[in-house]
Amino acid sequence: MLGGVIAMAPTASAATQYGCPGKKIASYSVTERNEGFNLSNVYLYYDGATGKNCVVNRRTGLGEFGTRARLEVHLWAVGGQSASDVGNFAEQAGPISISAPGRCIRVKAVVHTVSGYYGDLEFGGFCG
Image 1 (tube, rainbow, N blue to C red):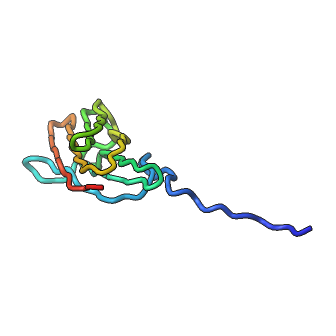
Image 2: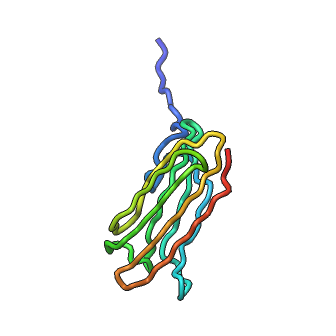
Image 3: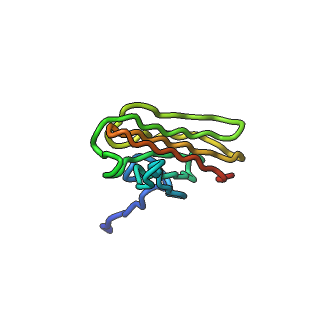
């Protein structure tokens, strides 16, 4: 009888640090409208195993990380599915995900702080 250990590689859909499975394909900063400092970071992922896109909008220190205030993230496929997460969050909005085979996706992120700062961002161009 032979003995041994079988090692299994992690699957492609293993969860990431922010709750989205797959590979990070883009990250953007949401900057404050007037002052220009970074309020949050938006991370977009694609999971090849499931064909889903996933996004989170995560506060930074200047975005008052840890303090509950309005935070939004929206994800949609042009002519297809959409998902949103909107609320008073201390750390992040999302993760949210959609399936968008053969379609282009768009993302919108909005940040408010209790100190009155505001920023928003919209991007797209990821087609598959």
